[in-house]
Length: 187
Image 1 (cartoon, rainbow, N blue to C red):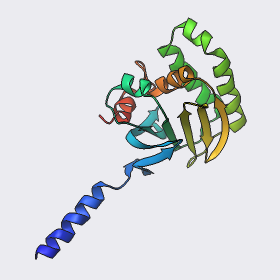
Image 2 (image 1 turned 90 degrees about the vertical axis):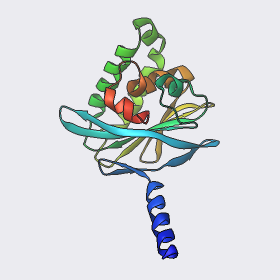
Image 3 (image 1 turned 180 degrees about the vertical axis):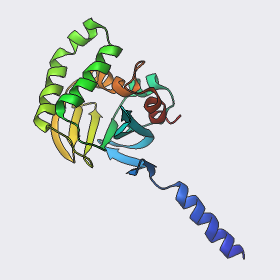
Image 4 (image 1 turned 120 degrees about the horizontal axis):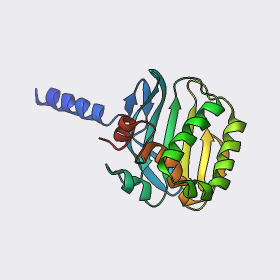
């Protein structure tokens, strides 16, 4: 009887250790990026006009429920976008630019103009993303933000300031979707 209870307890506890699943997408509990392991801080579903667009996951070196702490956390970090429907490069960039403008002053955006041009060029080269594609936005302190689509590096954009601005799309004061921000912060 004790052995059966022990086995049941182990099975129940191992179920809690499995990867998080959001809208049918399984996200790893942890990843290795650069020189360290990152933990899944939280994940949620991006919805626009009643359509499921993507599942976004935030990976950090140290978990936090505070957006500013996540944005300011030193070292490697990742936002992973698991695409649930086709999105053209134009629509993706339009969405990014709208939220970037909402979270930055005109002067801040002007200072980011060279990096934003690089981001635009990278997404134009990627073109349309399709259901099942994975877009990783990886920040590595020595190289900047790497845009990786389905495991292939599509471009890098230098600067911690750019990464912070980019991550504000999901974690800023005026995020793309407030409840998604909360989920990514593990709330």
